[in-house]
Amino acid sequence: QVQLVESGGGLVQPGGSLRLSCAASGTIFRINTMAWYRRAPGKQRELVARITISGSTKYGDAVKGRFTISRDNAKNTVYLQMNILKPEDTAVYYCYAEGQNFELGYDDYWGQGTQVTVSS
Image 1 (cartoon, rainbow, N blue to C red):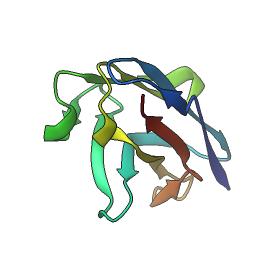
Image 2: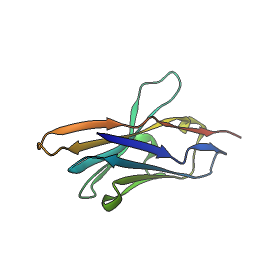
Image 3: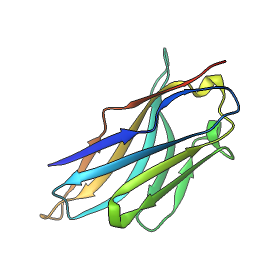
Image 4: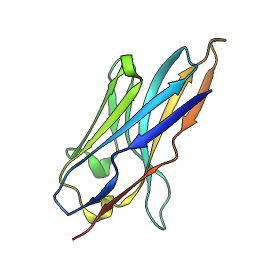
């Protein structure tokens, strides 16, 4: 079983920065894709950023140029550096991972989420 644990959320003023971390632990052969999603009040869940095991990245339009996703494969950890934060970035941020199990199948995993609030 694999667990994802997010950390780094909190309250920050507009224009500020936060760095989120998500560490995967448990039994897994390989984590192929890791991503950050978010859900703001009254809105659908949206992709924030995604990164493959080879380092290819994709960003949601709302965060391009401000957020950077990275990962440490040895630690099975993904990071999200968030800069120039705006009030509309306020949301619960969820870590996601697609992992390959030892039977060579694929499983999806979700973290519990961490709250990011951008407010004066």
